[in-house]
Image (cartoon, rainbow, N blue to C red; front, side, top):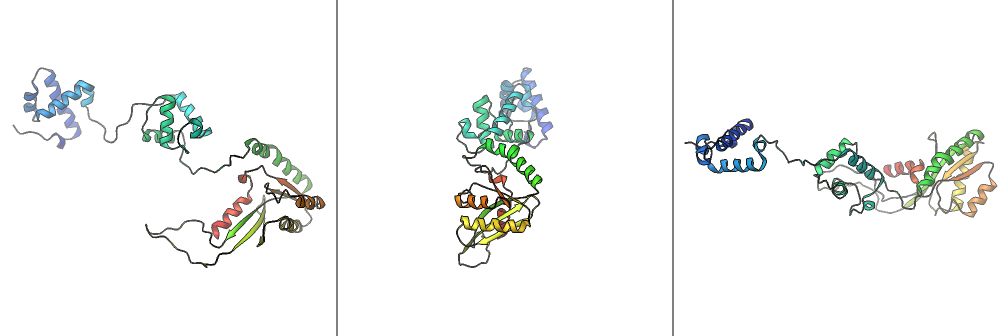
Length: 301
């Protein structure tokens, strides 16, 4: 009798053939006779019977193609706990040997915390379902005080804004930065393996810039070659006062040593009718919109 190649049959036909052959053997037919009757090899029939003994008749049904998915799943309270951990903590705080929350680190956390083993694909599917996306992390200094930042946003800055409105003052946000001739920002497309080039001078030189921006986007800046000192800073503040044309200047800066120097304090006190100095919380550059100016300038250089 001619043997049938079961692999060439449709999935539905393969399932029907398996079912009929196994039922025949379970009904008392010998495996070699069933193999002859249904046109398949005896090895195939033996394999089908082994599957039937291990998984039952459901194991003979048409299987979904692709990688096998785990039957493990997370319960509602486990999912809520996991989301809170990923949102509020870092892997090292959970005693995991990872720096970032990746599918691998989350998979290990689920295994250690709940005893549930999931594939990375399942973890990524859970993350999408819970509206978590992979993102480039923002660098935050260890020395930063979160309570001070919240106090600044909720109390200190609103008080500054209210006082500026009362005294008809202009609020400026200031910062300093350095620029080099060999600085390269941004990326350029190029064939794989071929590094793109950009023509420029081989001589190296640098300059510094101090800038200030208002809440309405008015920008003032000064370029200088010398080291940043109290004299440079007070000279720039004097220019801001002239540009304000009679309006008082509320200048918000970071805690750079020059900003807090005795020379600057004495100068500001001598010009207290024209300027008032405020300081941002330490290690919180994201609160200063002038940082965006620095970023844009370096991107366009």
